[in-house]
Image 1 (cartoon, rainbow, N blue to C red):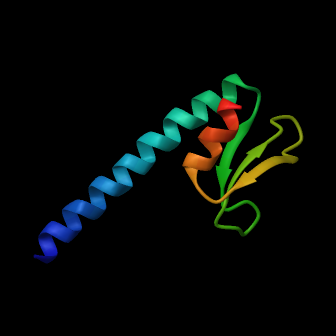
Image 2: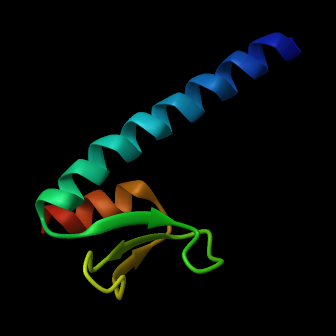
Image 3: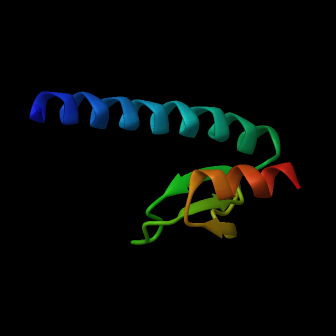
Amino acid sequence: MPQNSRNHSTTTESDESDRFDELAVRAAQAGYHLVQNWPNSHHWHLLDPTDNHPLHTAPTLDAIATWLDS
């Protein structure tokens, strides 16, 4: 059973990594830089790419996607 949990965790991490990659491209196309843990936060941040000024903060990648959609 622990092996299945590990596989599930790896899949989840991989899915989040893929989701991050997708959103990082979308953010860059919209003129933002997507980061996590900036500064010392567990939230996701869209930063101005020239001065790293935070423009939007959200607790999840889905919330970032929703904001980019608006």
